[in-house]
Amino acid sequence: MTIEISGFAWVPPFAQGYVKDIRPRWAFAEAGLDYKVHLVSDGDADKPEYRRWQPFGQVPAYRDDEVELFESGAILLRIADRSDVLRPRNAQEAAQTQAWVIAALNSVEPRVDNLILPGVFYAGEEWVAGLRPHAERLVGLRLKSLAGWLDGRNWLTGRFGVADIVMATVLRGLQEEPILADYPAVSAYLERCLARPAFEQALQAQLQSFAENAPA
Ligand SMILES: N[C@@H](CCC(=O)N[C@@H](CS)C(=O)NCC(=O)O)C(=O)O
Image 1 (cartoon, rainbow, N blue to C red):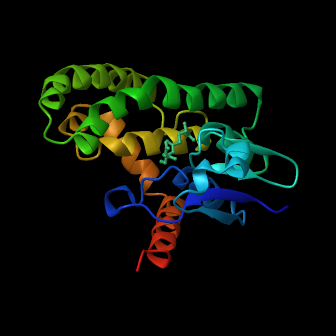
Image 2: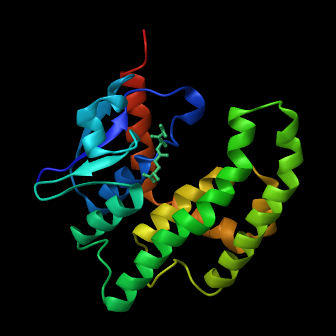
């Protein structure tokens, strides 16, 4: 089976290692699946042929011999379905995996983004400092709930899976934030996820691609 994902040809250094094609790259490394990367350069994302693959012009998009799709959560569920290593072992694990992939993207990621992204894209603007305490409180509520779920568990579902890949890549956004230390069960979970060799493989693969395509 031929598998291809899309990734940006290059992004500025602050974003390198964090572009969301790291999610499928991590899943492929866990599953031992080969994949190709379709590089999206400046201007390509707006072209009709790319919009037919990824309607928002974002990365990653995914295709294999059978299907073409977008959205990192949907992509990871597809990869899990292709892999004995990542495929949930029963109906309950499959249902929990879907639930946690959606929860990571819908219940947790927007709050993490709300805390982090204003400081990245609007650094120094007055409203950013005003928003921060509220954004931090809302993140804290989610971290508290997550800590409760993780009590007595190593992973979100019965075994490590794509839900953990999505959740860990969301939580990575908080690594420099003091609030993470207030929830040791969550920070320990994040460390456990990021200590997996497949994460390091995915990270290096993304960084290497940017190094090879750096503007002259
Ligand atoms: N919900 C999408 C978000 C993808 C996303 O935000 N990708 C970023 C790179 S990390 C992107 O393409 N940004 C450019 C843009 O939004 O125009 C997913 O999870 O796949």
